[in-house]
Length: 69
Ligand SMILES: [Zn+2]
Image (tube, rainbow, N blue to C red; front, side, top):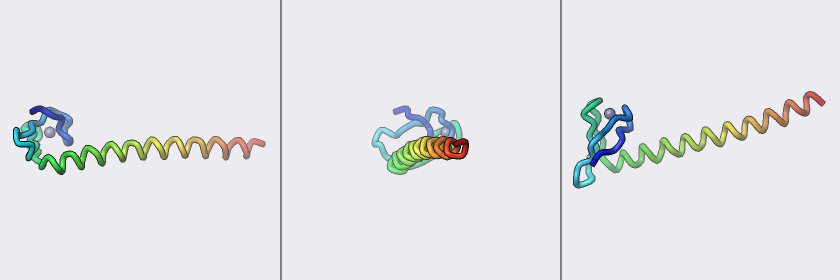
C-alpha cells in the first residue's frame, strides 16, 4: 500500500501486514505505529502554530489600538 513518506513527502510503501513503512526514495524505515504518531504530532503542531498565530495577532491588534488612543 502506498502512503506518504513523513520524511521526504515522497511515496513510501506500507507493508501488507501494516507493520512497517518503508521509503526507498530517501532510505527511511519506520514502524506503522510510529508513523501514525509522527503524522498525528505533525498535525497537532500545525494546529498549535495556527492557534498561537491567531491569538498573537489579536493581542497585538488590541495592544496597538490602545496605544494609538
Ligand atoms: Zn522518503
